[in-house]
Image 1 (cartoon, helix red, strand yellow):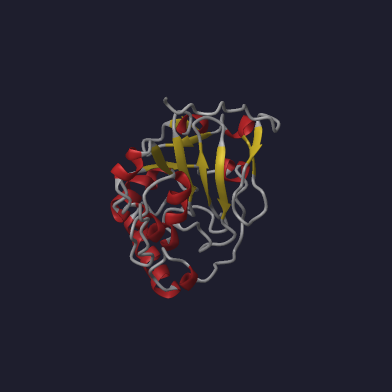
Image 2 (cartoon, rainbow, N blue to C red; image 1 turned 90 degrees about the vertical axis):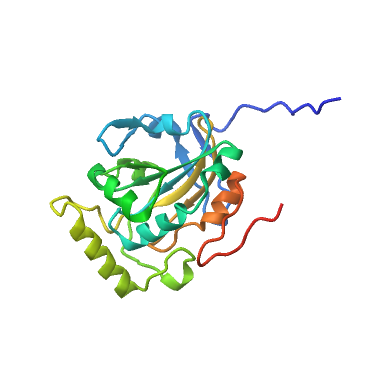
Length: 227
């Protein structure tokens, strides 16, 4: 006899404001009623409704620092390593949202080798609505498994990369920190990590594990998920 999946109960916590943080930090609450109808921009400048991003499938949404920041770029270097088939096997999507002008997306993807979708929230409205914080605290690069450069070399690389981009554009607020969320399908929050400083981003393999995706070996994080 086939197994019967238990009936799933509809959310009862305010329906429009669901919370389900599984980390050790303070519980994260998302007002989906507000956030789902906010817009981000693709690299062509088209407006994309945030709620449509995670409407049909479970989605790892990574809110980064601005796109010319070396911490953001080196984190994206590791996101680029994730094989697409790992996500497709479990019907999970990966999306990056940055607090930068959309004009920087094309160059950012070229520099990092990232083939996943990148959107921008240049006025930080969605960042703030999702609970992302502002902070000038940088953090310790040695505590991140995704930052490969030291601070001085990283800043020099960021400056050089910025010179290759359209310098007339504002890059984004250096105080704006990001966060990582696992959402969907629909208005469901599976996990949230709010970055408290520049190097406080979630470990990518932690996000993959929570989302049910096979782990990947990164240069500074060589663990793999043994099935």
